[in-house]
Image (cartoon, rainbow, N blue to C red; front, side, top):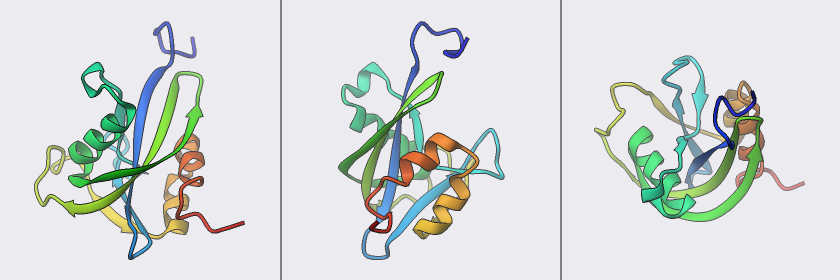
Length: 136
């Protein structure tokens, strides 16, 4: 079953944390696969009310990122999950955050982020549509 036992796909909200002046994005390591890089993301909870709030909450919990959601990017579908992507302009980084003992974080440029996200097709596809992408 594509929905992993759920009656409908899981709703996941992804933050794309951006340092605009530097043209960089902040990636974090996956907890399940510590050698792989991901965007801060997680399940939408009813207490979040809005999808953007979930993306912002996940960025703070997983990466210690504080900032402002500035743009809805896209929605990507997999058999078990619906991913919603939002750009987050970073204002500050906490030195100690909820998952700081479980993850690494690193600022990278667009090309490097695409390379590191390739292992997870939905993340790479969503990220490629952000405003850091080269103009076509």
